[in-house]
Length: 212
Image 1 (tube, rainbow, N blue to C red):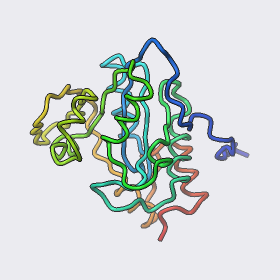
Image 2 (image 1 turned 30 degrees about the vertical axis):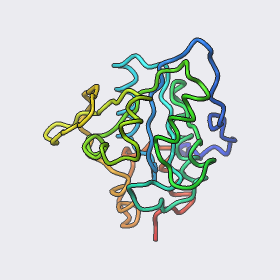
Image 3 (image 1 turned 180 degrees about the vertical axis):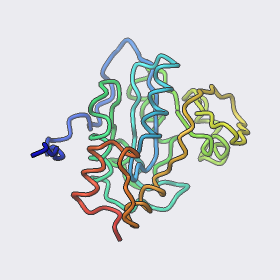
């Protein structure tokens, strides 16, 4: 009989609010979003930015309530667990629940002010997809936010890019995938194997997420 892997029920180990870990200062990539669910395009973008910019780590920070999208369909616990499962095999990927602990609407400016207060020795790089690049000027206190972070855009071939602030561009494989498409596939019974990490796919199936 073939072996069947099950989603491990280990406690989340990389989800903690601790920030000030290294007085020397590090280069930290920041990826925000609802991650409902996290998928391979998120992970590929993070890996490409990390390696090409020589970042020490990439922190995935899930939104509590996103300011520019509808509220997440799944609980904070489920989204955090899926992120932990998706990132646990990469020692340079970390999950931070800062915005979930803070509650309310998740504004990047609030998170970055907190991070700079707690660990001012770090340099932070805000990693964004092309759609976020084009709308960044509408974010809360965008002119102040760019003083706290370096903006990093993931370039998408054929996608019009019109940044209104200085941007470091990173080329990455053109994976046209969205969490919305993942949820729609689950709801219609279409396979999402290889679109999300296998542990995430198993978790979605086990918990019955996105079926309604």
